[in-house]
Length: 316
Image 1 (cartoon, helix red, strand yellow):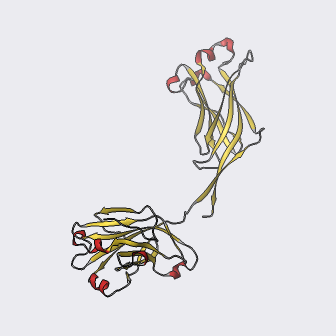
Image 2: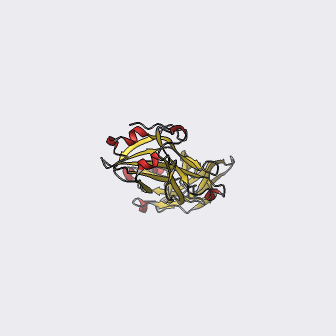
Image 3: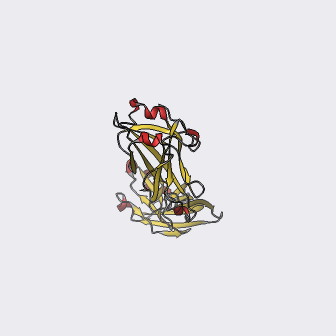
């Protein structure tokens, strides 16, 4: 059996059968043949609620518009045009049902999103099912001169939250230097050490160091990271792009060791970037290199902000 779309329906109708009845409304029509024989043009259901609105089903046993005379037609209508008086349309997806009483299955037809407003307050299928198929005993739609039709309506609500996302470039000279003296190094090989926090660009940062190495680098390399610890924004979509350079000072020869990188940091707290293997421990501890003097290391961090994304709320 084929469903032919009428003028009120879009291409891409979805047809299926299922066991469960419609969740919003089921309408039983008895003595169907009498409605047809007496040219009863339109059968209207009672009002039913779905998605916060009142609806009704319009059923034409002898067809309507393009389906007149050879199809049954079915429409979903806003129960009262007065409910649309404020000018706000209702966007909805709806599904029509007819019950196959022989197989105990519901045959359904679903279209795409339709806009109900004061100019167009009903949508449906002028060629829902051919009268020949609808009346055929084998179809199971009409048994003992009784049929069941129904509808499900899903109203697409306006979003409660609307947001915009944009990117802002920082001036070229937005940079900051911070110096950290890490003392008592020999007693920190099993520790994770944190510098004091330093505020820059409306963000709070700190250095994080594993003197004895982190993870697989433990006992082999010093690990060093830059961490964003606090931010004025807290959306996953908001990030700040920073170029950072961390320098380990040679306190004797001035031949410093430095690493540099550029990364996006999450705007929420806890975003961290850096190096698991910043410098080999044997190079760090070699006295002639000047990196560890009087059990103290000196690190310098230079952070340059490049750009950031910002998310803001809009009125829906």
